[in-house]
Image 1 (cartoon, rainbow, N blue to C red):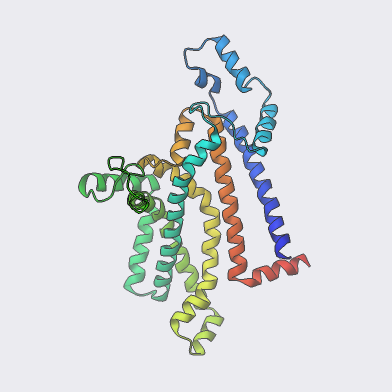
Image 2 (image 1 turned 180 degrees about the horizontal axis):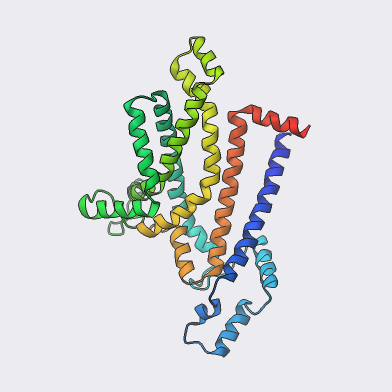
Length: 329
């Protein structure tokens, strides 16, 4: 299986998955109780006004007709118009997307890098104080829900130790400065939301990497590398970690969607102006086009992330690609 065939197959699977997500989300949102025409027209609207709104937005059409129209518009780059915000959904999603990507990307980076590092350190000293401390940290991280961690951080840093801001993405009281000052301000506001979102996943990756490293360090090829007199650091990071990191990447691919779900709660707690806050507002106002646009964006991110992870598999362990070629042959 060459690279072109590999990429083509992954793209075909990605398009099929995104299509399935769109269809499932459409039916799920339309099966929810409530009348979107009533949300648009208002509670005091009479029957004639509601009928006019249903005709204007196509709510009076059969459900399959509405679905086909929606998919046709998406295929042509039109995500529809928001009922509540009275703006194109693509514009709303594009405006909020950078904030969410910054939050989720920071949380993923910290959770994977720091969690894997802690797991490796614990595995290298399984009977030391380091292992005990990391084990306690992972248990605490597992036990703390994302929203609870966010509320605790808000209470701590808003009342007792006001070092980090707990609201928004920028300080609106300061005058606009240069690009560096603006970036520092955003990073200052990013600290607490990132810690809140990443703590649970950091605990999970540290435990997972510790378990896999303990298994890999007892493998025959690792003992062979040590018997050849290679430095312990080279044995751990070049030989053992290369194989131990694969389960971490697998779990990461499965949890990208959960990270976006957790971002909804974190953004609500810290008033972070991302897609999570937009989704929360759209749910309250039954703004179906906005929800569909956010779900489409999330599905695309999840699919792309898993495609990147598939590529990393082949890069880290070329035998995976060779196995695919052998199966294809």
